[in-house]
Amino acid sequence: MNKVYADARSALAGLLKDGMTIMAGGFGLCGIPETLILAIRDAGVRNLTVVSNNAGIDGVGLGILLDSRQIKKMISSYVGENKMFAQQFLAGELEIEFNPQGTLAERIRAGGAGIPAFFTRTGVGTTIAEGKDVREFDGERYVMERGLVADLSIVHAYRGDSEGNLAYRKTARNFNPVMATAGKVTVAEVEQLVKAGDINPDHIVTPGIYVQRLIHVPNAVKHIEQRTLRKRQPADAPAGAGVEV
Amino acid sequence: MPWTREQMAERAAKELRDGFYVNLGIGIPTLVSNFIPAGMSVQLQSENGMLGTGPFPFAGEEDADLINAGKQTVTELPTTSYFSSADSFAMIRGGHIDIAILGAMQVAENGDLANWMIPGKMIKGMGGAMDLVGGVKKVVVVMEHSAKNEAKLLHRCSLPLTGAGVVDMVITDLGVFTIDKKHGGGMTLIELAPAVTLDEIRSKTAASFKVANTLRR
Image (cartoon, chains in turn blue, orange):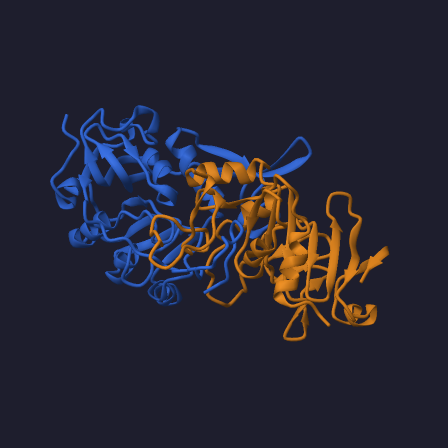
């Protein structure tokens, strides 16, 4: 069973259809599967429902699929950085379902784990809870949220082996490991492709059972949304210190 | 003299304790990290999947794979750990984070908080705010006391809520209030900024509040 494909187009062959639901990993532009997003644009499938924490920025990340008008609906927690998004939403061309970020992550985790629904305190007493089952446990009110699965998950990892085992780098992990569990098919793009056994089994974050196909993207372009810097000073600043730049 | 943004952040930092795990929101709350007392060990959680968030990088050392929840470049510390978004919010919703300091559009005397949408305007989304206020042990709001002469401390919020009965403390440029959200004890003014009078703060506050016997100024 070969999981490694030559490029994004061949890795997605036979998996794409109009109207499907796609989960796309990443937080902002960090850890996004941009090579796979570009291949979905080139494939031209339309009316997509995309589950992703954010919607990219204009022309970058999922902004690419907004520009090409392939997305019908976004399920996200924050989409503030994208002008094209605002334009299409206000024109009624794009649906949005906002989820609290933790609810979104847990819905995906639950979906991948075969859990159809769960209860959380998040959103109780807000519009998010409207029309949903609210129950009391141990004197606290909780709202029921549904597990979430997708026809296809696309994720970005730092290192992957031929078995589909994945490891991530720093905060580029974010939604990628949970989304890898919740796709009927999961396709990963990896910056370093190694042979099975070359990732310490203790360091594997996503076991290969969740990954059906992968591609090597050694030259993936990484974007920085907010480049914030500190000035060099003789003494080290305390933890977390900095001014907004 | 009302407090400046920095002084509000400095006052918020007084709520930190040694060993705390802390989540800071965007804006004035971010400045709180500049006022962590020397010798106090505090780990900053960033909800995109990081504990032990370090300062901004020096020029040339920024890393696209290393950002905070505001999508700003940050750095790693010896205490840093990374985890997925699901783990991050398990730690938030499971009550493991000691304190969240965040901004607000409106706060009501019963602890209701509104900070994510204005009807009729483009909605950007709530991000992790609803999870934070619903799950963290103590919620401190830092905000301007009023916006364009409209009170932000209200009897009831008029904007859609981020959380119902979730705020423990409000720090504004004029003073500090506590809210007894659990036992319905309402809002109490515990501190006034220098040279701010009770009359002034009353005239700019639509919420009902008590004045602490031990009011500090």
